[in-house]
Image (tube, rainbow, N blue to C red; front, side, top):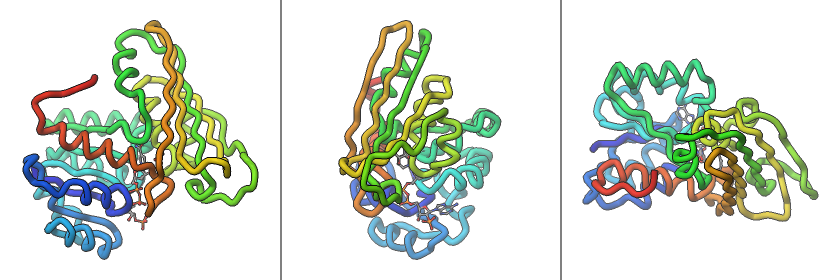
Length: 254
Ligand SMILES: NC(=O)C1=CN([C@@H]2O[C@H](COP(=O)(O)OP(=O)(O)OC[C@H]3O[C@@H](n4cnc5c(N)ncnc54)[C@H](OP(=O)(O)O)[C@@H]3O)[C@@H](O)[C@H]2O)C=CC1
Ligand SMILES: O=C([O-])CC(=O)C(=O)O
């Protein structure tokens, strides 16, 4: 499987640095970023090709791994699917817009392509997928990040946002994709609280889900990426695991 990466920042670097073996049958070969230098850096590490024109990537791959921004999904997502190529989307916030999500799913269906959304920086999506077979009644997300992860300078804990996920992804497009993942998996516009807290040094996500199965609560204390503290290491690892699982014959978890 030939893969191209859209967006050559923190997540892409972790993927490239943890995916050097080509034994998996997956070849991460093409790199695109609006900063050509970033694409060239990753291409050099992985003996790949940096492209100036995204079509040169899409036309030559089986799958595009988006690790750029919600805007990039809006800009290139349909194009990838209409060319019959699969896509892994990290910037899941783009899919909170129901009309856009439906158009993406329609394009995937009509062109025999697939859209994958990794679990990213939260835990519990496996249980939510199982729970969604019954009825999910309520889901909440509380995200607590250090000031540097949210680009804030504060001395004391402060609630930055309290409301629905659909609004949260508009206000914090590169900080709360996890709320979109949770909402889409639960089929609910979940309640979100975002707290900036100078006392924590990790990106902490607490998820509570209630349904006819019972209730669960998960708490992830994520180490932020060195190069981009907004983003947690686990998010990049989830993309790598999903990518590898596409070529595996034994699938664990829902
Ligand atoms: N699902 C989840 O749980 C998580 C999702 N994410 C999301 O994944 C995405 C990638 O994260 P991360 O690697 O940390 O981000 P980075 O900012 O480190 O890297 C993204 C790269 O993509 C580039 N880029 C952005 N938009 C475009 C575009 N339209 N066309 C070409 N290049 C573009 C950026 O350039 P520039 O900097 O110049 O804009 C940057 O070089 C983000 O949207 C982030 O919010 C992150 C963590 C968890
Ligand atoms: O990485 C994280 O902790 C969460 C994040 O940035 C996002 O959901 O966009």
